[in-house]
Length: 102
Image (cartoon, rainbow, N blue to C red; front, side, top):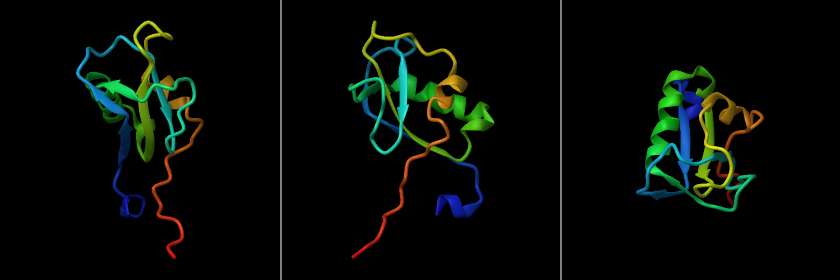
């Protein structure tokens, strides 16, 4: 429905939300629950908000859907470039279709 509406959208599917400070971790994007680079499945709420702000400010986020998690503090390089983060998806989006219904 969202694709067919013609309205701009970005769907951010975060992992488990953490009540911990943001801007301290490397963020990882993936699609359909496959997120390369980490086995962690959580992300600070502040980092989710930062990605959503980036989606409002950067047109390349329009029409995109992805999963978002973070590496543990101290593992990896802290994410600062949200445009580069999105490019890590290589154009892939989550598939929210229901597939064939029996």
